[in-house]
Image (cartoon, rainbow, N blue to C red; front, side, top):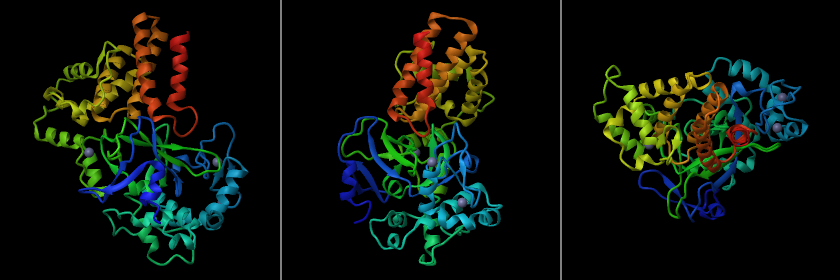
Length: 440
Ligand SMILES: [Zn+2]
Ligand SMILES: [Zn+2]
Ligand SMILES: [Zn+2]
């Protein structure tokens, strides 16, 4: 029985159905409330980003905060929380990679660009743990991986592999590799990427949307591979397709190209329809655009009036966005706006940070789906800006009310996505800030 058989998917209350354009779609078999876990799976294989190597455990991917990690004495290139994680990883795949790894990483991977290096390491991890049964058993995740559609650049040859088991037939390495580029996931902790992971069943199930109703978060536990959980961002009704996003929806000018070049499809979500409409209308040149006017119009739309959130307007996309706001969808405007916010967020001037931050909030509400965690992160940043202002420039009842409003709105959004990755993170920071805002 295949891993993606209807019978196996029953445990998650989801099912596969035919899709008019894609291969098929995964739909909810029941109603889900926001925050529900609609799917979960452990990684088949993972690889840490070079920048995270030595900072995180190679077995469980957790960040080492207090003590230094144990280094593998064989290759000196793998690091672990403790002997338990090390033993677990040794059995899993490292006993086959430890000896050849040092020369592999310097000679075979030496000058490769980062993404090719990552693919080489990830594929090496996967091949070092493959068993003869994986190649014949229908229920094996390796079979699910082989059932995925290959990426659009099929002719790219696989990078050198550190170790290939003798029973792996010629051709299989390439068959696995051509499914990597368009199917693997960037895993994140506190929404920041720490590595790449192979999750074949998730790849088999979830189609892309730039305004998805669900999002993947990553759970880290000792002596366990990373676990992906797909969380409902809003209520999902039985029969509705469940989608996640394969890219950052705020990449307005490049995301359609990424869909085509990296994934080989054209996105037809409501947000892409809207962007296509905008691109046909004439936007003012940067020189004529009135940024201050645009900022004010955005602040108006966000429901943020002098920092008091009257109503956090999400799903603005479902309404129609007025013509005078089309200029906000130019990357030049948005990058200037977010620069104005970040430049002033830490040391002021805080009124500049507050105004730019409120306009940026409206932009996020337009491009991100309901309860997308980046919205909650930005609300937390806004609450911190106002709190810093109070600390630096003295107390003020209006400012305190404003900071509390932002913190409350942030809590509402972030608690739906929930905690991910390492301890602390935005939810931990928010708890500390709430304590300051309500108890001091
Ligand atoms: Zn560990
Ligand atoms: Zn080693
Ligand atoms: Zn789209």
